[in-house]
Structure formats: C-alpha cells, structure tokens
Length: 509
Image (tube, rainbow, N blue to C red):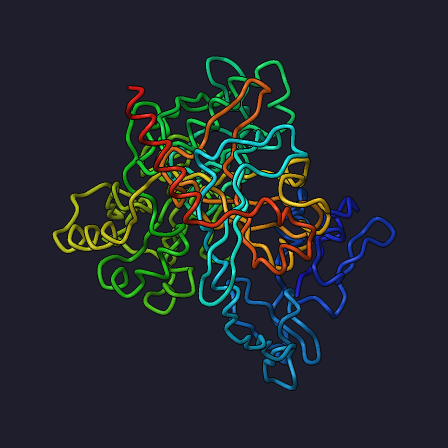
C-alpha cells in the first residue's frame, strides 16, 4: 500500500488523476489512500514532490505475478489491469476465455480471392461515369467470377513506410522533407521500427503536390528515395532493402526491447554475469530486477540511468548512442552501485539489443565499474544473441481511399459496391496484392507494395497517384450491386486482344 508524507504533499492531484484504481483522492489539499490501493506505484511515478512511498505490504494481500507491476491485491479486489481478482487468497481471471466460432470454408470466397487480371497497364475510363476499361469474366471452381479493373488517379493517397532500425531518425511528429519540401511526418514508432507517413490528400493538393506523388510512386515502385527529417537523420530508402541512415547501412534490427532480451536470454545470462543493462530507446532492461532474471540471480545493487517503468524496465531518452538512446559510452548507463548488495569483482554487462555493441565491467573495491575485456564465453553468447536478430529492411504499405467517383466505373449504385467490399462479397486488391479494408465508411485500405506486381504505380499532373485497383466478385452478385453486366468480356477474348496489342507495340519499335 502507498503511504503519504502530508508535509511534502502539495495537493496537485497528479496521483488522483493517474491512479488506475481510483484509490487515491486529494481532500483538503492532501492525498489520502483508500483500501482499494494495490501498490501499482503509478502515483509514485507521477508525484513531483516525493510525497508518496511504499508501505509494508499487508499480510492478507496477494501479489500478482502476471506482469512486472506485481500488484498487491487485497482480498475481494482487482489488480490495476482489472484482469485478476483476489478470491480468498487465490488469483482468479475475471473473464472466461473467449473462443471464436469456427467458420466453414467458403468456396466462393476462395474463387474470388485473387483477381483474374491486375489493373497495371489497364488504363482508365475517365470521366468515371463510363464502365471501367476492363471488366473480365472467367469460370473458377464452378463460379462465374468477374474482375473489374482501372488505373485510377487517387488524391487520397499515402505511403506508410516502415524502417527497421534502432537508430534515431527524428522526433515523433517531425516533418519529412525531400529537396527541402515537406513530404510527410514521422509518426508513432512500432516494435523495432520507425514509421513515416508520406503524402495524404492535404499534401497532395498543396503547392508541392507533384513532388509528393512522385515520391509515393517511387517508393511504391521500389526505387531509391532520399529524405531528410527535420532536426534528424538523412534517410536513403528503397523498399525491400536495408535502410541507410546518415550514410550508415543498418543491416540488423533488434531481437527485442531491453526487457524482452532479459526474458529471451535469461538462462544464458544468468550463468555468465552478475548483472546486465540492455540498452534500448523504448524499454531498457535491468536483468536482476526483471522477473526472468530474478529467477536466475539475486539483485545486484546496480541502478541504471533512466526512468523506472516497472521492476527491471526503464525508459531512456532517444539519441544517437547505444541502442538508440543518448548513452554514448556504456559506462554512462550505470547510475549507481549499492555496495550493500554488490561485491567487488561483480561483473556487469552493458549491451545493445542488436548485440552489435557490448561492454563488460568489473566492480572494484571502491564500488566503481571498471571496463574489462569480454570473456570468450560472453563473446560466444553475443554471437548467439546477434544471430537472433532479423535483417533490417524498408517496407511500405500503400494507404489510400477509393470510395469516390472511380466506383462509377464498377457499378451504377456506388453505395452497393462499398457495402459489397465490406461484406466480403467483392474482394479489393491493388496490383494483385490483397488489401486490408478498414472498418467504417468508405473504402479505405492498406496494401503491401512488395506483394504487388512489379512497378505498379504511376502519377499524374492532377496531381494524384495512379493506383491499380481491382474488384473481384461472383457475376451473379455483380449484377445484384448494379454492375455493368453489358461491359463484361470473356477472359480469353481480353488475353487475345492484349497479345495482339503487344505484337503491334513490338512492331512499332
């Protein structure tokens, strides 16, 4: 349970606003803790006046070990996550397992899972009130399947670019530029990766729209693009290849965050060192305080630089140092060593989560860390851990909306097409690649450019990205949604016509 030093408490209510249990209230400008407190320590972390601390746990509490928070749950109460309850000394899940219903295999859905042809090279039927340039039919698994294709100029276009790296590229929200012009932003990071959003309708229709759509097109066609982040890195990006950041090719991404590395390699590390600080710009791990490490070794007395999250997990600042943190030299990661726990000769490992950089320290008689050479056993382990790192690469998702006028080339009832896509009666693909259609109104989707046919994109002076769009549907349902049935053509007829055109093109050369 948490106790309050009333002399230090300033009644700011930070603890009250952040407590997940509503177990702390500010009354008469002083914090008061109720019996619902589970000692999750959230209030301690947000208190700026050092007015809160842990009290000795009550005998009737139950410590939850399902995560690193280790809530101390009184009988009859929930933990901070509301997933578990103390039922007379037993920890019970609050909700039964949710088992999804098994759905039968739908042969019709298999038949329409891939387009008969892609829209790449199909052209467009602009203005959009004409039927699409190709509406093709073929019998697949006893179903008459129709694919409708068009290369549509799409203003509502973006490229979501994923860059596998621990290198610091720039702050979240920073502008991304090409030749000094704004192309997009740095958005929220993901596990071991930075994410850029390039384009979007507001950039496309802006004064630099032509360069924006050119950039998206080149990224989608897996061509090299050089971008600069405001107050950040210069990026050389080519989809399918390793990113080059400030002239350095980053070939390996982390195996996991620092906390994850403690868990993944606990049994190895427990035999080789007395403590490990595994540096990561999201979550740095302190081995002997991490639950997995604590099973192997007693607490070492080492405290890392950084802000405590949960036992064994620390938040460090971003930077161009080790593990994407601001730590330039490994010794800087060690804040203090408590010799009430530590002993001279104790070995401390400091490492990045890619395991490219590691350093070993020994604690001297004065309780100071002194760097020593890496042992052969640790070097063998470092190689093992590094071999678990995946190749770093650049990937991109085409992220767009096609709920507008281009639907008229498919059907006379555009709302029915939208509804058919959301029901799964009509399958949307982009240059042959499956598209994830986002829920809600319209047809907003993401599609992996590496699953598309080669060089799928172009751009036009609207400005807009020319996107190859395909809808595949059973012919009967195509008629039900108001499709242009009279414009449907047999697959063999279209192929024959296309071959004839290829011959003419060859002769013209």
